[in-house]
Image: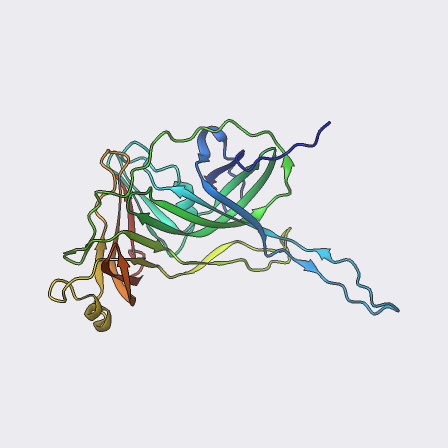
Length: 311
């Protein structure tokens, strides 16, 4: 029988929030498939214990495998569920990255950073005939909005992984919602309407994978232990009297950033607000012959450092 050739295009991610840390939530293709791009994975923190006995030769002895985690990376389109007040397809991933979910029935779903009681997720990674099960998954992400493109969130997720087994690809049911492009989106810094081409936001979670001698793989709970929210945008330069970009940086004047609403259909709209953005760096840029600034910012505050709202 011919050896099966696995295709990169025939891979699948399923994700579901766990009822308790590390308990397999058993996601299904019918209910928990997430449309992704740019999938990558690696065995994170893989241990090979070396053996260095003294022998009559200069040869080495075989190492001993002593546990590993798995890290997965991929991009997800930013879009709503199609129904206002219903969480988007990517909701389990946002929650596994330390965001608290607030649902207002028939109106909105909002996500903000949380500092405790972080949830975890189970991921099933189907690799065209092979299945990896990841439990106790937590992670971090960055979001990018570029004019004329679909907004995307890039996730980096780490979890405890089982040995792969052979398993047929399940039938996947994806959301039929088409993501809105990043156009017709107001962008306000303080009270000033800025002209930008791109905005980025990184939650900056610090992921800890502490050792645990009692654990099957020698690793304890994957944990979020710190957070530093940062981002950037690229406004057209203005007169100082219109908006003092450099002065606000030098004087430490925090500014509220509001994107306005991306999308025009109820159930498939989103917006981002950052109440206290402070400039970390200001540099020159250019776009189509126009002078711009490269503004790198940090987000001050506690668990209200930013809010991502779907309406």
